[in-house]
Each structure stands twice: as structure tokens, then as C-alpha cells.
Image (tube, rainbow, N blue to C red):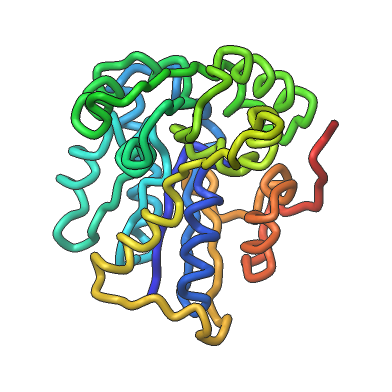
Length: 271
């Protein structure tokens, strides 16, 4: 079994680690675009073109499925990717977990990039899955970039700014960018109010990983032998796990079985 994942950068780590936990025997292909990141400020057509190049690089490894582990690419490129790869390779997009968050009642906050916050895409999801629930969209400028660079001070500053815009009484927060899942506990620490019930954070990684297995007719087998390999593609070039990825537990988990290549290095979260 081979599962490919794509993103502009390290945002794919959370979903890749979720796949690894469900199927330690699955081979993984991690295809990112360090030459073109960030994708967020790009036009829709440009995002689709960059995403297609990254997907094509992954497809040369003949995966059984491709996870688009990026909210921006899922918004702008899914039709193009599916037209190119399906039905040979199922393509699984990432959707913010607004539905499960709203199911618990409000208030709910959706943390996302400035381009996504207030977009027709996000408004449609809120209308479809959170109608009648108090939902606040919170833009998080700079957070994805800080996570990508493993810059601890910049991460904390971006989280603090977003926390200032988040209502104090929220019960749940949707992490509307895959990068944010890598710093979920920092986000929780910034938002949790003393004496309040534990804040619930809703990411997409676990659901996307499970959906990928369903699409290829595979069952979770977390007790399987950890024989799965990890191949890394950097803007189409074979490489190693980027240094910044190793700042996160998910990256270190995957690096244990990653094939060695240029760019692999140890690092810690700066600041």
C-alpha cells in the first residue's frame, strides 16, 4: 500500500503522521513545493498549476491514493487534480472540520489564513454545516509561514494576535489550515480560559487519513509491522525531510523511516 500526500510545505505532516499511525506498514510519498511556497497569496490559477505539478511528481511513484493535505489547494485545485488523476488515483481533499465542531453547539471559532477567512468557500461551509450556530472567523496572518519556518517566536506572536480576536467563550476551534495542527497545543494554551471546560480543537488530519483508506478499500491496522517507507519530493526533486519539519513530533515520526536525501537535517523549534 502506498499513499501520497501533497502540500506547499510542512502542512502535510499532520495527515501523513495520521496515516502512519493507522497503517504503519504503508509506504508514504510526501510531495511539497518549497520553490513555490506560500501558496496562499497566489491566484487560483497559479495555485492549481503549482498543485498539479506537485501531484504529478507524486503520481510518478504510483500511489494508491493522493491526499491533498492543504486547505488552499483543496479550494482551488481539486477539480484539476481529479480530472488529471482519477479514476486511476483517488484524490482526497481537505475540508475544515466545521461540521463536527458545530455539532457540539457554539460558540465556534474558525482559525484560517486571511485569504480563507470570509471567503465564499468558508461562508458556504458555515451555512451548510453550522447554520444557527454562533461562528466567528478568525484570520491568522503569518501563522502558517511561521510554522513552515519553525520560528517559535513568530508562531507565538501570530497565535497571540489570533487569540485576541477569538471570543473568550468559544467551546471549539476549527483549525482551518493544515499547518496549524502542528502547533495545536500552543493554540490551546493561548485560548483555554481558567475554570472553563476543556477547549476542543478540530483538525482534519485523522478524518482525511481514514477517508484515504476507505477510498482504497483498506482497513486501519495500527498494530501492523512498521515496515512502511517514506519518500520525500521537494518541488519534484527527490530529497530528505526538510530541517524545519523535524521541529515537530509528526516530522520526527516520519523521518525515522524517510529515505536519506539532500535537505535532511536535525533542527529544533526556534524560540
